[in-house]
Amino acid sequence: MEAIEAKLGYKFQNRALLINALTHSSYANENRGRSCESNERLEFLGDSVLGMVVADALYKRFPELPEGRMTRLRAQLVCEESLHRVAAQLGLGEYIRLGRGEEHTGGRSRTSILADAVEAVIAAMYLDGGMDVARGFINRFILSELEAGLPGSGDSKTELQELVQKKPGSVLSYELLGESGPDHDKTFTSQVLLNGRAIGSGSGRTKKEAEQAAARAALLELGK
Image 1 (cartoon, rainbow, N blue to C red):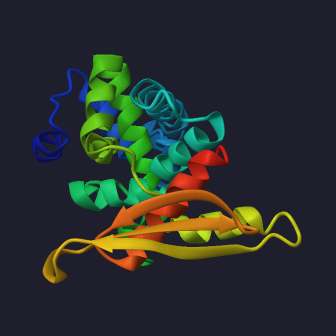
Image 2 (image 1 turned 180 degrees about the vertical axis):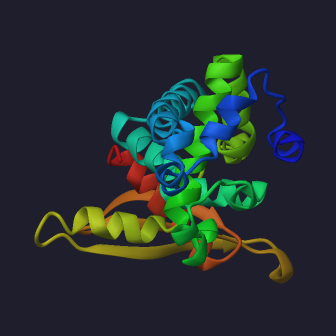
C-alpha cells in the first residue's frame, strides 16, 4: 500500500478505506465469506465529490462562462476517458483486487474498471482526510489542465457543427481574415460564419488552429 500511497501523494490514516477503494465487485463476490466489500459504494460517493469539486472550480475560475458551456466542460473533465488517463498515470490497475474471471479477461486494463476505481479512491481520500485532501488530488490529476486557462473541447469545429445541425438549414463556413509575422512564425486569424453572419473569430499558428479558435469563440457566443 505504501507504493500507491506515494503515487497518490497521501498517506491514509485508515488503510481499510484504500483497500476497499481498490476492491472490484468480482473479487468481493468471490470472497463473501470474508466480509469483503466492493468499491461500488465508494464509487457512488466519489462521483459526487468529483462533480462538485470540478463544478466549483469552473464556476470560480471562469466567471464569464454560461451554464451550458460549464456543463460541457465538466462532462469533459469527469468522463470515463479522463478518469482512465488518471488511472494509467498512477498505474492503478496494478493495485486493484480482481476476481479470477476478471483477471483472466483483462480486467486490469479495462477502462470502466479503472475509471470507477479512481472515483472510489477519491471517495476514500475524502472520508479519510476530508474535502481538502480530495480536492488536492482532483486539482493535481484532473483539473491541472485548467492551470493553462480554458481547455478546448478537443475538436471545437466538430462540436460547433453538431450544434448548428440541430437547426435545419443552418450553414457554417470559415473565412481567413488575415495573416501576420515572418514566414517562419506566422499568425493566422479566421472567423466562422453561421448563415453568412460572423459568430466568432480566433488566431493560431496555422489556419487549422485559427479555425479551431474561432469555433471555440463561437461556442462561447452561443452559450455552449
